[in-house]
Image 1 (cartoon, rainbow, N blue to C red):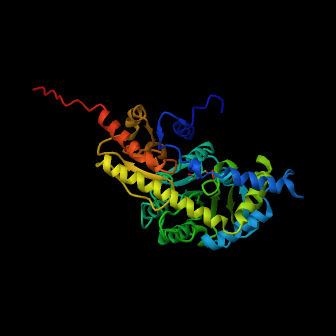
Image 2 (image 1 turned 90 degrees about the vertical axis):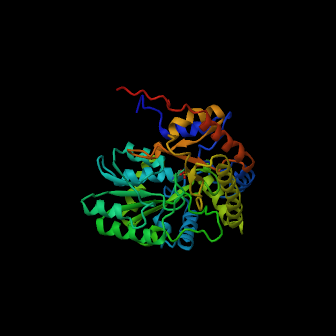
Image 3 (image 1 turned 30 degrees about the vertical axis):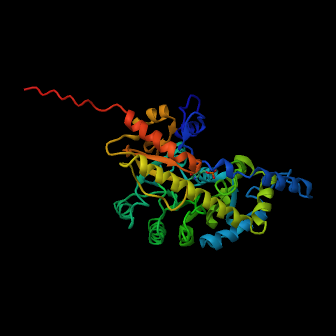
Length: 394
Ligand code: PMP
C-alpha cells in the first residue's frame, strides 16, 4: 500500500481536528461525555484482582463479557444470540474487516445502501469488492433491490446501518427489516447489519424495531460500545451464524489474538454495575437530543433554503444547503468562515448527490449551534456566483 492516497475517512477525521473551525465533520462522541474517572477506577479494580487482565485472553473475547452481550442482544434486539456466536472486536470497524476476510473474494458483489458509511466502503474497496449501491432505507418496499436481484444480481454480502444511519440518520422500519431477511434467504446472500448507533434513539419511545438478525440466520450483527462508552476503549462485537464461527475465529487469531483482557474486564465492571448503563444511555440521549434540536433550529433560522429531516437518533443531519449548491464546492468557503462538514459525495460509490452534506451534531455544544449555522450562511453568501452576463451571438 506504499504511496496510497489519503483515505476519505482520514481527511474527515482531520477536518474534525481543526481547532480554528467549529466541526460538524467528525462523527465523534461528545468529549464531555467521555468517562475517564470511571474507566480509571474500573481498570484499577481489575488490576488489583486475582485475574488482573494482564495475560492473553480468549481470542473471541472475555467469556463473561460475551455472555452479557448475548443476553443484551436477546432482550434489546430480539436476536437469539449465544455467547459462542459472539466475537469481541476492536470496534465494529474491525468486525467489518473480519467479515470480509472470511467471506469475500476479489470481484465478489457487495450491495450497500445509497448513501453508505464511508469507513465500510473503504474496507470493501480494499478487498476489491464489486460495490453496488442501491437505496435501502429510503426505499419502503426495497423494490429497487428486489428488481436488481430478480434481474440476476448475486451479492455475496449486503451491508447496511439499519438504525440512525451514517450519514443519513435514516432507520429501516419493521417491514423493511423482515423483507430484507426474506430476500437474503431467497437470493442466498449474507446481511451485515452494522448497529453502531442502535442504542442512541433520541426521542421517547423511539427504539428501533428488532434487528434483521432476529428474523434470519443469514445476518451477521455488528455492535459497538464506541458511542455508548467511548471509542478509545475499542470494544465492539459481532454475532455470527454457526457456520461462520470457526473461520472467524481463525482469521481473528491470525490478525491480533484478540482484544485487551484488561479493557474488557474494566468494561464488564461498568456494564454490570447496577443501573449504570441505563443512567448513561439516558444522559447521552438527553445530551444528543439537545444538540440535534439546537442545530436543527439554528439551520432553520439562518439557512431558510436548507432541506433536511431531523433524525430520530444517532449523530447526523443529512442536509442540502440550498437548491443548486454543491456541498463540496462550498466547503472551502465554509472552512474560511470557520465551520467544517463532510460533503455528501464521500458516501457514494458513483454518481454522488453533490447537494448533500453530513452535519454531525454529536460534538457540537448547543450554545455553538447558532454560530455554526451563521457561519454556514456566511459561506453561502460568500460563494462566487455564476456569471449573470450572457453573451448572445446572432
Ligand atoms: N460503523 C458505523 C456506521 C460508524 O459510524 C462507525 C464510526 N463512525 C463505525 C462503524 C466504527 O466504529 P467503531 O469501530 O468505533 O465501533
